[in-house]
Image: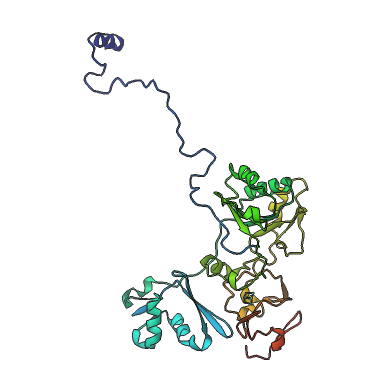
Length: 59
Length: 316
Ligand code: SF4
């Protein structure tokens, strides 16, 4: 069985990326924490570009 | 072959009729003598050019009321059934503003029962308070603030909050007659004033509308939201909802019956016959508005519409 850890340290020694063959077997860890980016705030209705108005004389 | 557009409606009155086009918002107030031919076309719906007089054809064609089609595909244009459907049990909540507690409670009611339109009558500047209270809520969708305070009227409309001047004219008048497809459809089977409304007065009493006499509840009581939920489904609360204009004396002969909102309380004589105690500002039998030259009241024409009978010397 291939020793992944040793393999990566060896490649690093020669200044090569772990996934040198580009086989996607070593996914790059994402260091940045993923932001949940809501375009609208959670409480607002996404369709607030229209709202109901009285369509006739009420009072 | 030609067909009549489904956007066109013809409402026949006693003396005059309304030919209206929802698409272009054209309204023609025409004498009944000229309406006969159009009425037969409405029944037929499809016709050949030769069957219609050239002037009428040109008129209908110029106003885009008819379109050319083929006989083969006639069945692809079935008659439209106008049925009013709404996803809200109550559409309008009217509040006479007195204090912040009732305002807050009214907003709570809107939110709980899902009432899209909140209308507030008052002269105090509470716009910011309203804005803060509704900003996190989906219901009420819009707030209409009705006031006669000139300094408030100078303010701009906000998103979801509209400021309107109080209308002090008589309720039904020339200016409030409106060609509106939703109103038109609603008026075919419901009373356009009482339907889907709830009113809270300045003391917190809950009624159907400001004109109604029956009081159902006070929002100062505990557990008022649950109580209102139960009240709005009762027959008593919905007493006038289905009294459409075709059931009312006089109004059923009026050509504006699908275009007006009338705040008079109807009274029942027998099932399917309703009358009003006061006259409307429009007299359909002479087709004149109050204040117009030659106006006569309905009573002076000898027409009686009372608790016991409806009688008229005119041929109706
Ligand atoms: S007579 Fe009746 S239908 Fe005609 S405008 Fe007055 S209230 Fe409306």
